[in-house]
Every structure is written in C-alpha cells, then in structure tokens.
Length: 99
Image 1 (cartoon, rainbow, N blue to C red):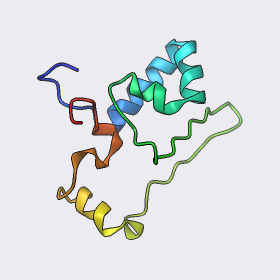
Image 2 (cartoon, helix red, strand yellow):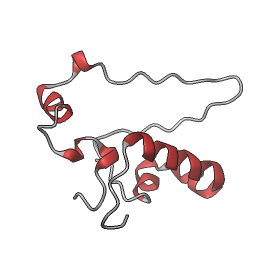
Image 3 (tube, one colour):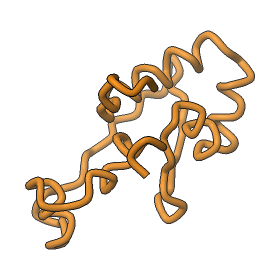
Image 4 (cartoon, rainbow, N blue to C red):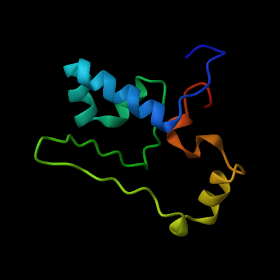
C-alpha cells in the first residue's frame, strides 16, 4: 500500500480476496487452510483471537452471513463503531501501516 493510498474497507478487501482466490489456486488453498496468513498478504493483520471461516458456495449450497446484531455489541465495540475507538477494531482497516 502506498503512502497516499487509503486503507481498504472491509467490503473492498473482501472483493480483492475473492478476485485473487478465483484467479490463483494456491492462494485459494491457503485462504481455505490458513486464512489469517492468506489475508496478511494484503497487508492486513487479523488479530489471532478473531476466528476467520472461509467457505465456498456451490451450485447447490448457498451461504447467508448475518452481520453482528448492534443490540449485542459491547460498549467498547459501540464506541469503536461510533468513531471513539481504535480504527484497528475492524480488522479490515488494520493494515500494517496502521499498526
């Protein structure tokens, strides 16, 4: 990431990861087996305590991912969402430049 480039949003990071996984079989294998290491290739360090599950859809299996319910967030997580917390609270923007 260049000095002037802003960090990727979670959605942008997701799109980049999917694009690379679709074009690079070795990356896809790494992403499925060791997601923290694969995501780190994008300059993003996912905290070890954050579990990352990578699943692949098929023609007969579709996944629907429900986001965190805001009513179930801790006060600390609410502060981060409201802008009062560490920007690395959302791993998608916690690049090596921010650490």
